[in-house]
Image 1 (spheres, rainbow, N blue to C red):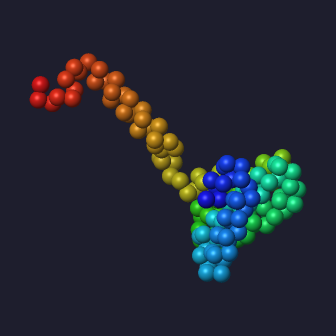
Image 2: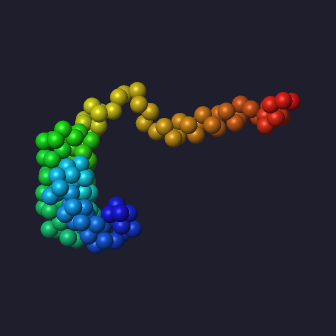
Image 3: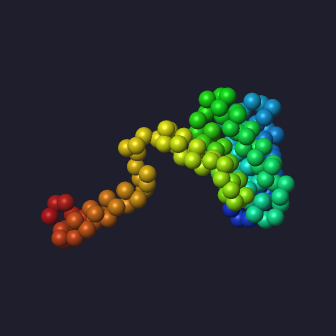
Length: 146
């Protein structure tokens, strides 16, 4: 819900959703949910930086660091990648590079096999279109008995 609110530009609603998620997840030790909410809030802080809120940068760094620490401590590599991506987003908002994007790419490369199709939906669409064009000579494609 926070991501949808942020996508529509309603940063206040996104912030309330994330605060609620953190309030629910933290005391109950829902580590994956907590790490996700912290990384999401860090990305929200990056959006707030671009609107002129300079305090949001330090808050976002704190959230991204906390998300990364949780992920590393609990062996959640995909959540660690999410935290690294949040740090990279903060770097972009600040207009500098602390190397977070490179660390994120390196971890992503470790987590995904090289043979994995980077865009499976486009591959399927291409195959469907290929099959359609290869049948253009068939006049009775829909009638297998003819």
